[in-house]
Length: 168
Image 1: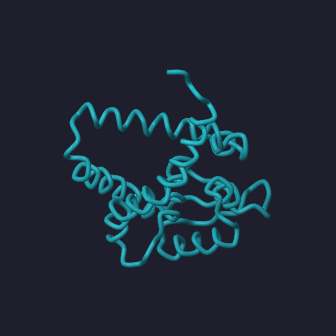
Image 2 (image 1 turned 90 degrees about the horizontal axis):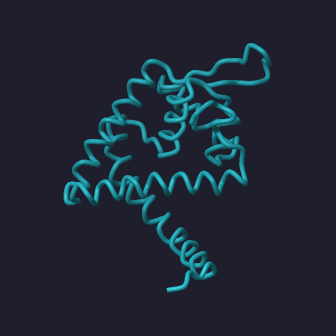
Image 3 (image 1 turned 90 degrees about the vertical axis):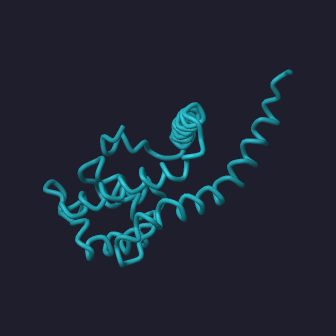
C-alpha cells in the first residue's frame, strides 16, 4: 500500500479534533476528580498543570507558565491566587527585575502534588487493569511518542519550555 501523506494528515487532524475533547473529559473524570477530591476547594486540571510545572522547574515566571499552558494572563492570575490562598504556591519578586513575579510550590504544595501523583498512579492501575502487560507497554510508548511529536509540532509556534525553565 502506498503512503498518502494528504490522507494521513486529514486523518490525524480528524483524530486530534475528536480525541482531544473525549480524552480530556475522560481523563479529568477518571484521574483529576479523584485526585482533587482530597481538597474541598474545586481545582481544575490547569491548577494541576501549574503545580506540575512548578514541581519540575522549582520556580518560574507567572508569564512563562501562562504562555506554556496557553492560559490568558488574567486567568492565570486568578488561578495562581487560588493556589496561593490554599497555601500551595507562593509568589516572589525576581531579585534581578522587581517587575517580574516568580512562583514556586510551598512545602504544602509539593506534598499535595506528590499525593496527587500517587493517587493518579493508583487510579490508573485500576483503570488500566484489563490491559495486558504488552498492551500497557504499547500504550505508554505510544503516549510518550505522541507527547514528543506534539511538543515538536508546537515548538514551531511557541518557545520551548525547557529553554525558559530548564524542564526537559
